[in-house]
Image (cartoon, rainbow, N blue to C red; front, side, top):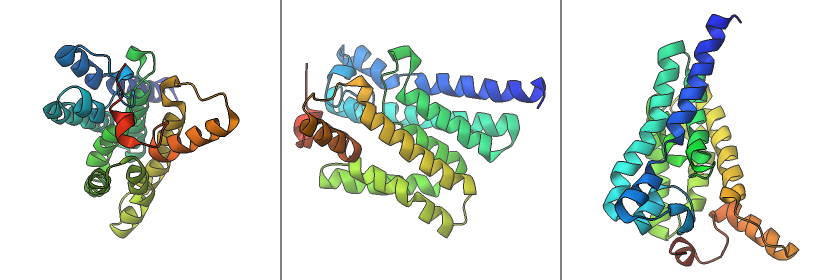
Length: 222
């Protein structure tokens, strides 16, 4: 592989990460409400926390922006290489930027929105699939476990619709990224007590929170 082949890949990785790192939810909290979302609710830089602590209508522009971060990165990969593999890789790099943004000391969101943006480019039915599961979770009062179900079952839909093989690998990758981010939780410390530590780890992995009560968790304030 010569320099002419390496540079476009390096460029895609760098730009995709920076696109993903753009913290629009954080900026919305600062500009509209004058708050730092990292200290509210789950502490994630996400549309859901904008919905809960900034203004409900703001989730629309924030959500669209976060989705298109993944789409732009995937399209960049397609444009420069013509390869779905590179497009998926670029999109996942944007997800990593969203979850660990350089502009916010690597404290970010959970990556579902930019991943839906990747699917919008490479496998549009997957977006509706994820939204359906998230809607179920919303109606039942907690979308965190249902988001994992949507990702874990995505390869089934992909096989049924004869989608690209890279979608299956992308689903596995985003599950791993999501679980790592939930466990890392923007460097929120774990309890010192061993039993409590195990309990919190399980809650983070399954429900993306440190306590049992979902409403109490998302309504936290400094």
